[in-house]
Amino acid sequence: MVTYCPVCNRVDIGKVGANQYYCWHCCIEFSMTGKHRYRLYSIEDDGTLSSLGEEKV
Image 1: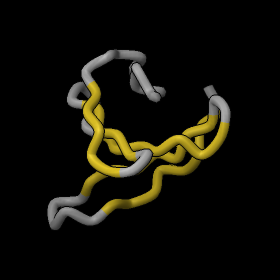
Image 2 (image 1 turned 90 degrees about the vertical axis):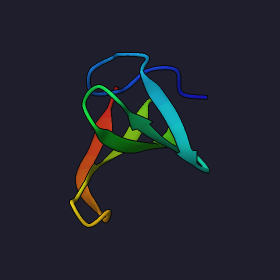
Image 3 (image 1 turned 30 degrees about the vertical axis):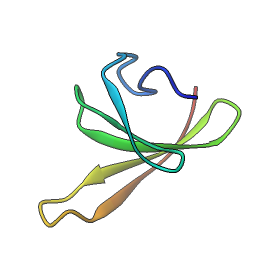
């Protein structure tokens, strides 16, 4: 279970799907792809997700 945002390290996150989370502080959606690896997405105006790449924390 994810307890913090991999971008801003805040705990203001919510679960939006199976293994998908949303950060209320930096407004990104992310999913865990492996141990300490996350795929990051920005949410477009029409609700679609645009990939921001993968980040290793």
